Amino acid sequence: MKEYITISNSEQVCEIVIEKSRFIASAIHVDNVEQAVEYVNAKRKKYFDATHNCYAYIAGDKAKFSDDGEPQGTAGLPMYECIKNNELDFVCVVVTRYFGGIKLGAGGLVRAYSGACAEVLKQCDRLQMTDCTRVEVAIDYSMLKPLRKALEPHAVEENVFYEDKVRLLYLFPTATSNTISDIVTQITLGKGVLTTKEQLLANFK
Image 1 (cartoon, rainbow, N blue to C red):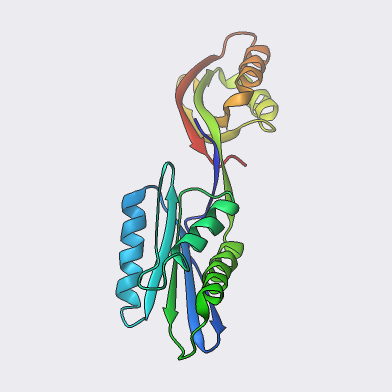
Image 2 (cartoon, helix red, strand yellow):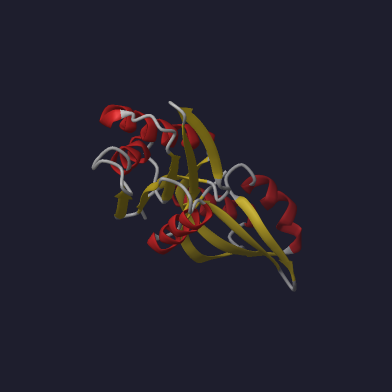
């Protein structure tokens, strides 16, 4: 799985004013192209009276940007390059402009749109999406406390089920799989049963 850095699901919005023109930048995490398109359409609806609603998004191997009536290459492309230079993926940014009556020129527009995009991305929390593995560990009750203590520095305990045996659900970076397996074996003297549930990309902390 390809690891990547993205932003949180919490939308961030900021506004800058340049030569009386308002630039409202909005950014959010998207899981796919469909969500990006929905977000752009929602912004167009919200700011229906704006002069321009320019956007850029990157979602895995899919990317798109639009100048929405601004001179070609002065809005969408600089925003796309800004997202790319921040090494972010699965991100959509919309910059809405309310024209203030003073033309900025091509260079001014590039600086305005890329600047607004950069500013809103500064406000976003970064999430490192890591190749992780989720496992279930079945153990005797007597092994619960020592196993939890041993695994705490290496894995996140997501759930626990108290049945005839204790079943614990753990998430950890796939790169540490051997370490986790060794710990379970040592602590339970080989009696613990470790079952892999799935491999996924997750923000492991």
